[in-house]
Image (cartoon, rainbow, N blue to C red; front, side):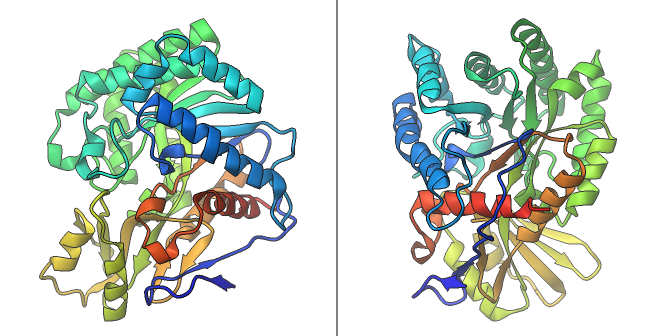
Length: 412
């Protein structure tokens, strides 16, 4: 396998190349990558990002670059858009929305989903807990999310459905008032139901469980939705309009088996709004070389929660990677540690580090068995800019490689 070199010991990535006969993603679903990997906070910056990075990725997938193309020359290209609150407001003013719609038509691209988790700046500054602000107890979060759906109502194709992913209510450290969270979500569901009737779009919001979120694993998600459904005057509207954005990295961090988790969510009548295809770092915390290698992933922008599991299955959580590395804790009893650091799907870290990529594979295997359970899929590896420098490759090449890996998993 091809290997980056020279690199930080224990941190080089092995890139796996799928067979050249890789099939395209099944036609009844929609696969994109999330543009939150590219810095863009204003609408002008977002336009530039779309015209450069996004079209470059599209063209790489069409060319194939010594592998079979993943995208036919005349096939439409799906965009998983990230818009800050500022960019969304700017897009809704003047003729920006009409111009964007024209650009989509001219480039044979379409938008079916928007990442509405990060409200404000998401690159080049300390994000960490700020990515949860404002949370769903605040009207600002509700109004921002409505703006995103207003944009989808104008640009999305009626046959694709239209989803927005968002935070899991709040962050545990905020001690948010859950009754306000549920109240705002119920208001949004009713508003979306009216908008859907007016436009013909299937609108749905996906709450994205994340370590130390207001709800973070399968059990907490089931309990939250049970309370949400019980609170609603019309639970059918909630079931139709409010669901889960299942992030493979996040549920792997919680040590929840993909098939068990997805089956449980579906059985509870919780809509799988969107699936994020993503992978996290993992290592043996008893191995000093592994602990030394993971230090290379400390950086000041994003939360990198660490979850350790002992032989009894009990999980110990650290808010961030530096908290784990400076903790005075006996690690002898822990068998596994997983770190919330998204790494490329087509890469495997070399020993002593490893990844949770098998969880993403299990999600895609479940999808083959349940083809109608979810139609929205998004590759989300937003950490390109904070990967150790020796591990970075041109961002468009990384994204194209991740597409090829996903498509290779769907061969049957």
